[in-house]
Structures are given as C-alpha cells and as structure tokens.
Image (cartoon, rainbow, N blue to C red; front, top):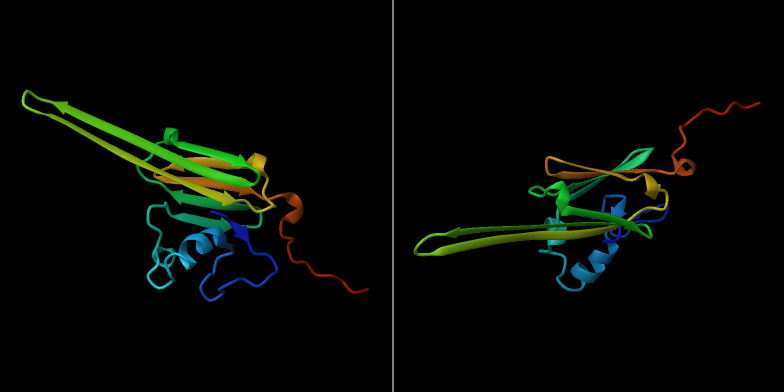
Length: 156
C-alpha cells in the first residue's frame, strides 16, 4: 500500500476521499479495474486487512493499526527506502489424543501492510508500541518542515 500525502495540489475524487492520505496503488490495481466502485470493500471497510488510522499534528504523525490476538513477537516491522512494512504471523496448533481418536486443530493468521512514508519523517526516530491489540507508531517530523505558528508582522 502506498501512503502519499497530498501537498498543494488538487486531490482526486475530492468528494469521496477526505483524508490527507490516499492508497492510490490499491485503488487502481484492485478496486477501480477489477471490481467496480458500488459494492466494493474499499468504500465499505476492507476485508482481511487490519484497520489503520493516521493522525497528523504539527510535530508528528501517529499511526494506529488494529491487530488484536497477536503478541509483540508475532510482528516484524522494517523500514527501507521510505517504506514502512508491517508483517504479522501467528500459528497455533492443538492436538488431543484419546484411545479412540486423535483431534488435531490448527489456526494461521497473517497480514502485511506497506506504507510509503512522507519525505518529512525522521526514519531513525520512528517508535512502535503494541498494547491492547493496537500497534501504534509515532513518526516525528523533520524540524525544517514543521508548521510555523502564526504571528503578526509589524508594519514600519
């Protein structure tokens, strides 16, 4: 999934997309051409992917990824060439043996999300925390691109 922040240009599908971020690759590859827009999971909630929230402040971005049922050890997070990749994999097996039967059950759950980071993020300072089924990332912005506070200019 590509995560691209819109700057000073017009957003595509402005009436449908209200976020500063848009998953353009996913939209064009999977949704527009393959399925159509009316009954699409893109508009009605994604199937098979954990929900993702992105919040922006003047100093940082905060990303929250809903991944209940996983443990910290199940995650693998990496950053390469401005791409943040989040992988999780969980395997469970249970076997019960009795005189007359053997019951063996297993479960497997995994996902992978890849986000393209905005250019104004300090990759070395990205922090992650997993608590109560939510994986949170704090992405600190570079100093030179932080929004300046409004001020009055005196006229001489």
